[in-house]
Image (tube, rainbow, N blue to C red; front, side, top):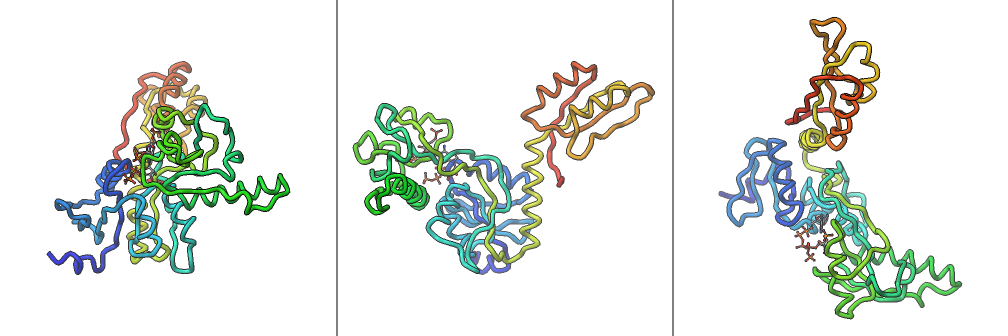
Amino acid sequence: MDLVNSLNDRLLFAVPKKGRLNQACIELLAGSDIQFHRHNRLDIALVKNLPLALVFLPASDIPTFVGEGRVDLGITGRDVVAEHEAVTPATETSGIKELMDLEFGRCKLQVQVPEKGNIHSAEALVGKTLVTSFTGLSEQYFSEMEKKVAGANGESGDKLKTTIKYVGGSVEAACALGVADGIVDLVESGETMRAAGLKAIATVVDSTAVLISSKHPSDPKLVELITNRIKGVITAQKFVLCTYNVERKNLASASKITPGKRAPTVMSLDDEAWVAVQAMVERKTIASVMDDLSAMGATDIMVTKIENTRTC
Ligand SMILES: Nc1ncnc2c1ncn2[C@@H]1O[C@H](COP(=O)(O)OP(=O)(O)OP(=O)(O)O)[C@@H](O)[C@H]1O
Ligand SMILES: O=P(O)(O)OC[C@H]1O[C@H](OP(=O)(O)OP(=O)(O)O)[C@H](O)[C@@H]1O
């Protein structure tokens, strides 16, 4: 197969090839009916049912390819997009558009110091040494801190230059090894940080996975179609469908508990005094919504999974 020529006229969509975002992305593609077969060891897969090709890349490289317009669409972390933008300012033709928050891969890029040390604020790290994989964002963050501290002391910013060193991984080891006074690294559960005897003292970026596009994608209509499909899957994951029966006289109070996305669907029953109600409810609140409905006299409360959606 002439893979390079078969990419002509296809929209290119970059997906993390491994790591923490990979599995959720594969599930999102399946839910969006983007059908592909990835050959062993090949990082490009042609999509069977759309003029699209998937490119499997390291999450941290995706902003570069999308930002330069070589790839039209991508999924990656907001942290790596922000890092790319810190070192590569957008121009008229290059740059990244964030199309949608995908609400998975949640983590924070945080400034961390030894728990038992004498540094308790980011300002106290000014002029000291930091280790990170996010040098662009760290330089940006500490240059602001340097100005703040210099301003407060009436000193010149140069005297307070903070040293920022790059490492590719295992950043949390830097303080114990005596290479740094603090680190800037990702925190999800906080387990790695605590195990390394560190504590967070500031947040540089709050991150989730995002759908991004280049400034001028080759097929804007297809970008819109894919965005809508992905939005449908994300909404389906976020909501459940709640159905119940309630006395007509209690409908107004019940509607306050389950207002739905626009308004609840109300259906008549054979019994004039009762109605059946159906509404989308956020999955994370469903248990307390059911408690509240039950407490106000609703009966036959049922919750069903939503397979897919198109809502606005
Ligand atoms: N606990 C976490 N640690 C790191 N990244 C996380 C975490 N939770 C979510 N992420 C997100 O996943 C993205 C990819 O991180 P991950 O470490 O999985 O990448 P990777 O491709 O395996 O990179 P590397 O080989 O550099 O570690 C991060 O940029 C971040 O947005
Ligand atoms: O708060 P937690 O849930 O513990 O997750 C955070 C850790 O996960 C990431 O490292 P990763 O496992 O990707 O390995 P790395 O250190 O080689 O980057 C990140 O760099 C932290 O070290």
